[in-house]
Image (tube, rainbow, N blue to C red):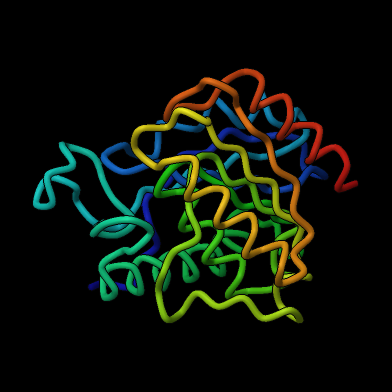
Length: 214
């Protein structure tokens, strides 16, 4: 697969604001979460990359995917590793391309995008100011490890609906427990009675988390 940067959309904010990178879910594309950036932070420049894999061959419709999903919290190992490699390369390239080297970075996403953001953050401790996980899971993959010295480096916010049919709430609870036991600075949000979506209440909670990062 080519090392060309991922396609992306952007909503520009003030030059002194952070970069907020939002990763879409399975079967969506880079236009899916751009509008959420302004709801999360009026000061951020929102960058929304397109996942590297076409979704149609895996039955995900006409959009894109960060990896092929197997079952439970298990992604297909090779596609997950390649998706992480492409995401890491994009996040390394993007600040300089935008003329914003050294700008604080927040990375997050929904569903597959949340899972991918969490895995990237755990593998690159301290690279982001914070992580925002909407309805994702802690991937069962050999590259995703919870080492106390690394998990403590980046604050994490994780919101999840208690009636999520796509990624059951028990997966969130298991991920929360594992992160806390490893010493992660974790803030959680139970979206009571809510399915696989991002609600206004979740956005408000995530925004308060971002405001607290300074």
